[in-house]
Image 1 (tube, rainbow over the protein chains, first blue to last red):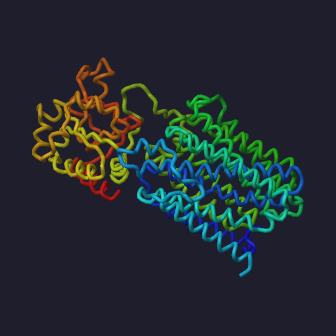
Image 2 (image 1 turned 135 degrees about the horizontal axis):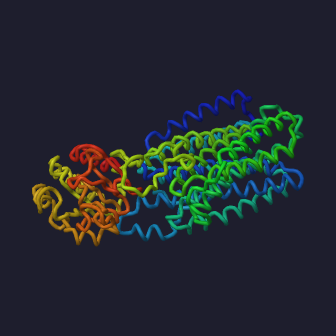
Image 3 (image 1 turned 45 degrees about the vertical axis):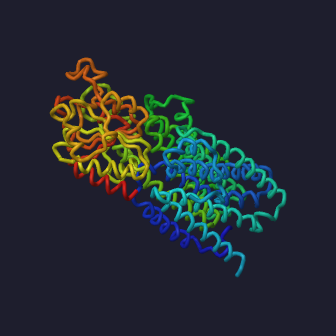
Length: 120
Length: 464
């Protein structure tokens, strides 16, 4: 319903299998200090379910569907926004110089979820 | 270009952003930019979705949507911003759980919005998979959060017949899934949803608090798969690809995390059922695991530390590694890491052995710290790098009255945040007694000749 030019079920299965290989190969060697940030970052990425919840709520009819759709959009937004912000905070630790590291960890920088934050 | 093609193209850009984000997040140098690229991909995808007719055509629904997003963001930003660094794992658990919940709700809503009998069987299967995995992830994450936040005990919870009960619930779900496929009945689907929530909770109960990060990583991969299932339901390539990327990379990451703990994943998930519990008290070494790291891992840990203590011992002398030790200290100092050497008076085979060796390597005098001086700094040290020393850092000297070395003053390496041992083997030191510190959760081993290991670390620090 989202992809109007989408392929049939076999096309989707092909895409699924290929994506599984890409996901497996793309993170070849992760140093252990990055395990938690990577987990958190990929957690934010599955927040893409927000797009699905928006379509479901947009098409909803009746109280039951509206309620479920509303809840779904809210939960998915929590996933996306919280996921990216938490990951960014973890990664702040990686670039601060020794002197200002504590301050950087405490201060709330301008980096935000939408990707419009300051570049490292 | 039709609107559909434009949508597919925009979503493809988002997908590329997600792949680059995962790639960036797996290297220290590009991690932060990787996360921002992922966020940008998300912004593009969500922004474009507002332009789809099925999203904006019912204005009441659109208003509700905006309200839901505003509430979600208003809850998430302060929670994510204000949480203490130490509480990060449980925040990830919560944000992961709500994602799984959202995926389950999408599947349920799709199911009730289409008259059941008109659904193809494979559609029902996709929906059931999304409901099942999403709900397991939601309930499991909620319980993991409760454990880490200490709302409940972090200890593994076991009870008689646990495996039978779990298996029973699993079988009941399988049976109901088949019933749902055949009858397309909504009430049965709701029962599947509830049982999946129960399954998620009981799956997490027997897993100890210390192992919960690995568990959260696994549930993260689950949520990815649930999102992919929703993608199949909604015919969305975007959701399938993004969900599967997370599912696959999350599975691999889960394996890496359990390896880093020196455990296998089944051991972490199911060990409370068996006999192997690592919290044993006795001094026996049987069945206890040490954590062995790679030079790359440890190099990164050192490179991003604030303060590193090098604790040399006899192994440094045997390997004639003093020059390489200095190279490592210089490489760290060049990155702004504070480095000092913690010198135990009887390290090596003679008093002052270490001072002599290090002086030979022209180590600056002000970096050498005698034991008492070093011990005052140890609690604020990020990494204690123990090079070929053993007895001089053995906490048994403080804690085990029966031990032959009880009462000997030691370098309190156990007070550092992380301990790295460069050792040739697990063999005990000169005193012939086992060292508890080797099995400490904060300890990572790097086996090999001290000189070889140090030169690998120099290379790893320079590459980090």
